[in-house]
Each structure stands twice: as structure tokens, then as C-alpha cells.
Length: 634
Image (cartoon, rainbow, N blue to C red; front, top):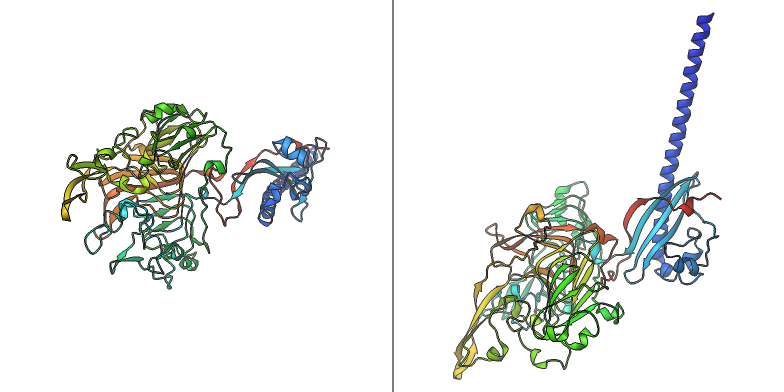
């Protein structure tokens, strides 16, 4: 009998233990289910806000009106409207006693509540906390919403054609029937490669993409006509060994043979609409070339993206705030939180009372050492009308911008040929009139430990490494009305000859290469794979009418690797290196390794504008702790 009771007790204990385990497992399963539902509800809150923004862009910008959609939405009411209580809560007429309101998210009783924690009306960027709940289980996500912008891509272009203002490309290596150069230094836009491409009159309005040839599968070359002859336009491309580690898009057909695209790839080329998602070998239909590696299925974006225009600082920031304005050719070397500046043609009016350098020192050709301005903005404008008029139609005098090698040109001596001064030398890329003294061109290099945007009315020339102390905190934006160029100087020699009727003229130049210009920082930053043969750029770059490329790209053979950590946006395609297709050999310039800085998905540098036909998107999403006021029990 005792044995029977003991056995029964053991069996009962086992049954009770099993029931307890089943109950615990059921509770755990239910909690996990509620947690999943709460997380889905939180994400639904972000998507709901996104849909409302797309339907009515003033959904948030009209928040100052207490009757705005944001203020009356079920998902937003609460004791605070976000981190900026003075702005959000007061305008929505909420108070510390306002109860948290919730909006239904699904059929199982889950709900969501969201609140905007920051809103930048200039960059159109929003940070929002969205919390979902299910049976008193709360999950929160932090999202960053913004208008589609160029810095959301590692690489985005309008036309995959060499920049028509690239003096290095169209002056040096394109010859007409008489053997002379097709484009001179005063070129603004080429008559074919920059307008028309044989599709019309050669005007900007007739500009065509490669896939607009009538047959989307033909991918034929584009040509321009000169003196009765047709010449192929330069169509730069990616090659074997090029790595693009980030989102890529072009409105045109990208030329690529053997490149590696590690993230999303999209194009407005209709041929890409037929790419077989189950056959990676078929994905080359999205490009002009073969042998590429796509880690994700390329996609077709009908209509492409309309890139934005650039703005002058006065259009975006208070003209009286602490930012720096210089005029004419300006060289800057960054040193952490300070910068060394040469700007010999800047007027006194441009400096005003800002701490951007002493006028008399700058005008003497010497440098000044100043702090990076508190507003984090430096703008280089053209020399204004009426100021130093003699400089307006001149090349930059040698020795005037911080020791950059420009040759021996002296306007007073070499403006016109004469018997006393028979020769001079000058840097080839600086021959273009867009680089002459009257224009707002910036030359920049160095390391920085503060966020900064530099912009130029003409071009920005990168003369050496541009490296951030912390690439997640210190962001550099580079904006150029024309082009963004990597410095690669080549000196040419001019000598005096006699034209008919014994009129002295300057001869066509002959080239003489300098040693490769590789200005790298020496402050201990690491380089790509420890390679000193690398030029490093940490920046978001935007070229409105030109492209991002290397000056004199056929010279100096193999310069190494151009490593960009950030983003590249350009209307035309800049040339970075020279690979001979026929000989299958790399001859000059840089190999490319581009990597996207994910921080740019949630932080736009100053003066960067949204894409004109872009929409609102969730650019960043991460899990967060639920706000205490939301989970507080009544």
C-alpha cells in the first residue's frame, strides 16, 4: 500500500510538473506572439505616417495649426508631442495631462501610437518614435523619414556621358578633321556631347539617354558631328575590379564590364524591366556590358529621378549667421576644427564681420587660420561685377593660391605675345575658362572633426585626402554648380610663333607631366586596407551640371585606388580612369572603390535639397526603448 501511494505521488508530481511546463510554455508563446504583434503595429505606425505625408506633404509642415492632421490624428495625442515640447505640444494644444491615444493596427486588438521627436523643415527630415502594443506588451521603433535625396544613394547620375565641360576629355583627346582641338578653353556645353547626341538640334532640350535610340536593346553609341564627320561621345564606365558598396541608380544606361554592385541597382532603362529575377546571368540587360556581379536584383525605375538645383546660402540660411563666404579661386586645408585659407581675390564686403580671415592678409596672397564656422558652411562665389575687373578674363596667376602648381603664367607679361616674354607654362586643366580667376572655384583637402558643407558657384577641386575623424558624426557635404574634380596636375608649355603678317601668337601647347600629386593626411587615419597608394574622400558630393572625375585622367598611368566613403551625385559622368578596351589594360587615373556611408540616410548635409520628383521614404529604421509616458499605466 505504501509503495502504491509513493508511486501515485510521483506520477502526480510528474503530471503537475508537466502542466506547469505547458502553462509556462503557453505564456511564453503568448508573450512572444504579443511581442511580434506589437512590433508589427509599431512599424504600421511608421507606414501610416509615411502614407499621410505622401498624400499631403503639409501633414507635418502644417503642425503649427492645432487643427492640422497631425494634431488631430488618433495616433499622436499624448502628454508630449515629441522632444521639442515647446513647439509640438503647445501647437497641438496638448498638455502634461493629455492621455496617450492609440490607433488600431490589426484584427487582433493591436494598436500604435507615434510622436515626432524632431523635424527639420529645411532638409525635410523627420525623426519619429512609433510604439505598438498588444495585450500590454509594448515594442518601439525609431524611424527617420525624409524626401528622396541624392545622398540616399552611393551613386546616382542623370547621364552616363562624360561631362561636356570636362576640358581634359574633350580638348585633349578629340581632334577635328584639320587636326585641331574641337573645343577650346571657353567651352560651356559641347555641341553634341551635352545636347542632342544626333537626336535633334544639339540643344539641351534634345538631350537623350542611351536607351532612347528606338531599340532599347541596341545600346548604340552616341555621336556628335563636327566638320562633316561623326565622333563618338565619351561614355565612361565601370570595369573589372570596381566595387560599389551601396545603392546605385542612373536615369541613363550604365556602361559596366565586370564591376561588383553589392546593394540595390536601378535604372530608367526600359530593358531592365525584362530582367529575369530568377536568373542572375540575365541581369546584365540592365547595363551596357557583361560579366557584372549584382548581389541584388536590378530594378527598373520608370521616368527616373529629376535631380535638384543648387542654392546659394542666402536662399537657405540667414545671411547674418556664422558662415564664411569667399570669392574667386580659394584654397582650403582642413585641420580638425580649423582651416587654413588662401583667397586673394575675396572682397572686403564678402567677409563682413564674420571670423573668416583678415581682408588685408588674404588680399596680400597670404593664408589665414580660422575656425570652421559655427554654421558649418563655407561658400565660394564668383568675383562680383565691378570688383577687380581686370581679373575677370584672366587665368589665375601662378603662385596665388597656396602654392598649387600652376606654372609660370603672369597676366601682365603673358596676356598677349610680345618680344620680351616668349614662353610660359601653365596647368592643363586650369586652361578652361570656367577655372579662370573670376569664377568661384574651391580647392580643398585635409582632415576634419566637425560637420561641414563646402559649396562653390563653379567647381570644387579635391587636392588631397578629405578624411573625417568620425564618419558617423562628422559629415562633409560638397556641392558644385559645375563639377567636382580630383586634382591631377599636368604642366604644358607655350611658346611664341609668328602667324601670317608677322603677328605673334601663342603656339599650341606641348605637355610635360609633373610627378603624381598625392596629398595624403599624416594624422594617423587608416587607409583602405592599409594602402598608402589610395586617395580617400569622406563626403557626400553633388555636381549639378557636371560630374565627379579626375583631372587629366590619361596621365600618370596607374594612380592607385580612389576610395569614396559617402555618396556621389552628378548630372553627367566624370572620368576617373582610363582602361583601353582593345588592349584590356588600365593606363591612367584611379581604380574605383565606392562605399556608402549609412549615416547619410538619416542626416542630410546643409544646402542639400530633395529630389524634385521624389517622394517621402523611410530612410532609416531601428528598434528603441518604449517611451515611459506611453507605457505608463492609468
